[in-house]
Length: 352
Image 1 (cartoon, helix red, strand yellow):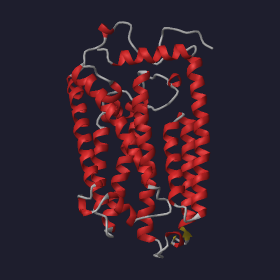
Image 2 (tube, rainbow, N blue to C red):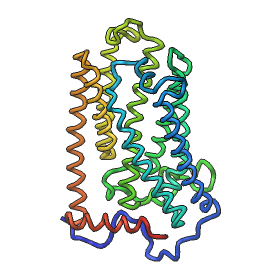
Image 3 (cartoon, helix red, strand yellow):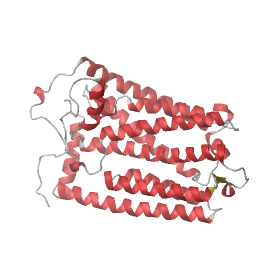
Image 4 (cartoon, rainbow, N blue to C red):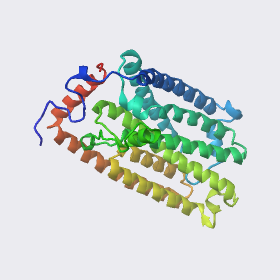
């Protein structure tokens, strides 16, 4: 056990806050623009998705479109309830950013500079995907391909957020790096340095922002895989009425499903080892269990899905226990850990 200390290794706070450089004109604009775009974008996403779910877009509910393009990888309907959790975390992030930036005048570097415009861009792709998906119904293959393009846009924006925020669920392992990889103020230098230059951020903020990105990226990774499966099987596979009897490029859809699920397991384990990202991996387990429930008509797919989900959840639980133990040791026990959490919450809503 380490001795309990009043120093928070996760906070990079200057000893004299009065000596901090005053924000540039661009930063002042950014301080107000990013929260405003986040609010507008989030409201639009909620409205567009509600219109889709209600069947107002193209006179067909989103779930019915999914039924038209069912594959052996399609999960049970309850799996999509995860959107409620994702949107809750997004709303929390936006509220935090709005309070800090617009009310307190506090520049949250994590939200305003690291994530920056990526969240509004993500919202844009989300809305575009919904329109393309809804209007791909009734066999519109062109819009189905377009929906896949927009889905990749959603995923790409999340990957960029993930890398720029430097997601890792054991904060003390984060290394601060203030040395630029490329010198100068060129566009290339700013872009590269935005990934390589990192700082230790607030413990509490990271436990709101990181799960938002991990949950969202985990589910979109699953959704992208399903979107790919739907697009390829609709365009290239054989046309038997039973989805389990169809084949793609000479390989049974059932085998393709098991292969994709194996890839999902490997990806989950990689993120658990690389970033201790049990949130990201848990989404995979949630989705695979839902596939197992949905695909009970085919024993191979159902059992394979359940086994893959169980493998992931085992490693998720192991990672959670390992991370909790490391946190408690780092902060000198449970009491010391709780003390750091309280300090970080207080710091989050204190002006710079």
